[in-house]
Length: 294
Length: 271
Image (cartoon, rainbow over all chains, first blue to last red; front, top):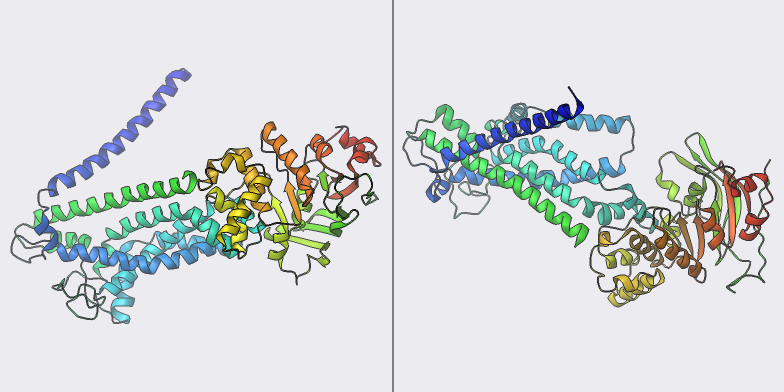
């Protein structure tokens, strides 16, 4: 066939494939939202679940998802910044560094159920913390850390080398160059990466089933003392998250409106993920704009 | 064996009356190795104060490597080893006891491609002094204004000092980088092909600046543009394959070179 026809055909094929993918995603998200949106109301979002009667909600589970996310970020952000800065700015380019990078890649692709079972063995049983927010956050950190290190390292490496030279030529040290020139410049990428990783952590289930547990005690939202057993902030209490709750309802839910609750929870989860993704790109774009053309 | 010639300094014909015959910086038997490869081969030369010295030579001859040794920037390249001495203000800056950050405060550098920071114009120029302890706001504003004026950029940016430096054109960005280097008030200014990435108009502006700089600074400029070297420099050094072939007054190098290689390069027979 002649070149022009082949070119047009190839373009059409690529558009078609892209169209299929977009349609797939739109259908998936649309279906979930459509099924679940009618269930969502303020009562659904704030009241606790009911084991056998209709009308339960996902209040504690929603809170647990966010709380776990915050604690995981508190643990992983400093660690990944340190490791990422080391890998990008200080590590010599030798076989050991390559090996380190490969190890991190492998850790990042571990199945989350394996991370969860590891957490179960180490945090829940051996350390004796039981099913708790603490165990769950640590398992999520193991899961999240390789991803974040990669994000930080790549964002830093993307900053052109001439920026480092410019800094050094002014007589400042390598750490000062990293702190005052490279890190600020890499910030949009790092922020975007953190928010996208948060989306993944928020929706994680398998790593939490055996670490944060599948139950949530009756939370007294008026009690903010982290040491009190009924307080939402107590890190040593079991904490079923939204994603785990969906799984539990569908496998052992005996309440009559199980399907509706599952649909509503899924819709909330999808909305949360969309929110993370969209705000990640939006915030990243704003920070980048301020950095380069303000 | 190629002779190393030291530049002749005759005070009487020079413009700029400051400290004729004084040497700002001197290299003695300087060698630079990248791993096993020797990029600079035992180069010795003196750079006179308040003069412009141009380093010329074909691509890969080592002129940029040599320039970067003068402010210890080659330290940042893994696998790079330096032998020999570089004397500046009475000290050998290659000695391990020397504080390399102090050296780089006094010997500034402008690179081939403009590399302003992703900050405002003001922040770029104030960055050096701020990081070396200057906190007085008025003093910083004064330094920024003076440096931008010296780099002939003040009029163009004085109304938008707090906008991003990345919005400037290439020529403006390079003048900003020059202002940033000047804000440190260095003794010596190292320019690594500062105009090669710029259009002719910007190049002309920068060449004018360099001629002005002589009053306050010693300038060493690497250029692959021979006409530029002839236009703006007092002294010229010709490098070839890591060796200093010939160095002397620009006028003499370009009209009556003593080495055949120099003559060949100047006439465009190679390079």
